[in-house]
Amino acid sequence: MSFTIAIIGRPNVGKSTLFNRLVGQKLALVDDEPGVTRDRREGQARLYDLDFTIIDTAGLDEGAKGSLTARMQEQTETAIALADALMFVIDARVGLTPTDRAFADFARKANKPVVLVANKAEGKHGEIGAMESYALGLGDPVQISAEHGEGMGDLHEALSALVPATPEEDDEVEDDEDISEEEAAQRPIRVAIVGRPNAGKSTLINHLLGEERLLTSPEAGTTRDSIAVEITWQGRQFRVFDTAGLRRRSRIEEKLEKLSVADALRAVRFAEVVVMMMDSQNKFEEQDLRIADLIEREGRAIVLAVNKWDLVERKPNQISQLRTDADHWLPQVKGAPIVAVSGLMGEGIDRLMIAIQEAYAVWNRRLPTAGLNRWFEQAIQASPPPAVSGRRLKLNYITQVKARPPSLVLFCSRADAIPRSYLRYLTNSLRETFDLPGTPIRITLREKANPFAYKRKRPS
Image (cartoon, rainbow, N blue to C red; front, top):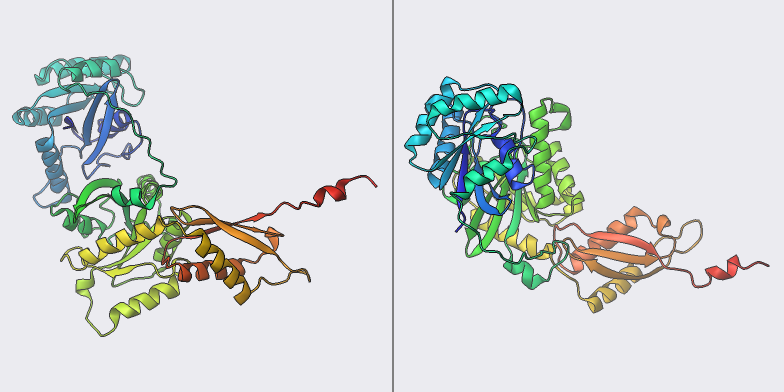
């Protein structure tokens, strides 16, 4: 079982920078503004030969009961309870503050091993601040610069006394480009939940987990980082990413929101299935359509979720109307599963999880070669490609080169002359014939080499 360390301390001392350094990726948002981190974030850390789980937490800060600040501290307290040891981080350039002293007592009361880390210790001022930290009574401070990677050897020495040795194992290489359908059925499904601010993404994930794991608030923009959580549903493993709400680019002014949006887009690229959540009171708005288009361009399987369905007045044929609206507004992902849910009440959650698995299976599908050839011949006979400038376009054959999403290469003459409308015809026909609802389909044109081309190049 992995050894777990929680990084704690007051806001803006560099906890997320240290987290990113230890996991080797820029997973947590970092900014000069205090209080950027709100939810707790877990990652797999590696420091030389030490492997352990690291938890980045919100800065320890006091707030009124029930406020967002107070609930952020509750998340931090939960992380401390889950951890085997703590890294208490202070800002050496600032020196000790009354808040540091108060939360040093908090760390001691946790009754867990504590490693005192004096961050930003580079330079003369940093050394002075690090010396002050002896007054906390938490042992010798480890002087580091998380931003520049200084002092990692000293941190390794301090952690070596706590983290048990990890037996060496052969690393398994995962081919994320193309895998068999059988292998796909066994692997955890990576799912990103995206949508406009305040669509109810975090509330839905909390219901799936059965606990208040992610912060929720009526205030739009509560989620900033893309937080990953592990979920098991009916024996199947899922890795679900909660993301910041995506607004129109013209409305994004603050640097921090730009970072949050970039983080959400990375989650979409990393995911295999993307659940696009819409508010039942304001569905299929312009930004929803833009988000769906982004998901299709990234080649991810898509599931449409209409949230807050408990607020909708029930009428006959509502679900059928949702299906009609989705196909009208989102023709590029025609047939994508659409599910009415209530993250707050738990309505429709089972249907959503089934839709995610079905969309994932379609996204991984390989088409039979014989069936593909038969479809290709029939599609051309039913609607031949148009002549361009009086010359007939010749389509030779088509083959699937990969799945995830289904991607095909069409060999033809004069690839630049084939109209996009004809490619849409082939895509829709393919989607209908092989039952590929909603998933992006890629058709790449390639000109077949002309075996007689060399004759034109011979000198006369």
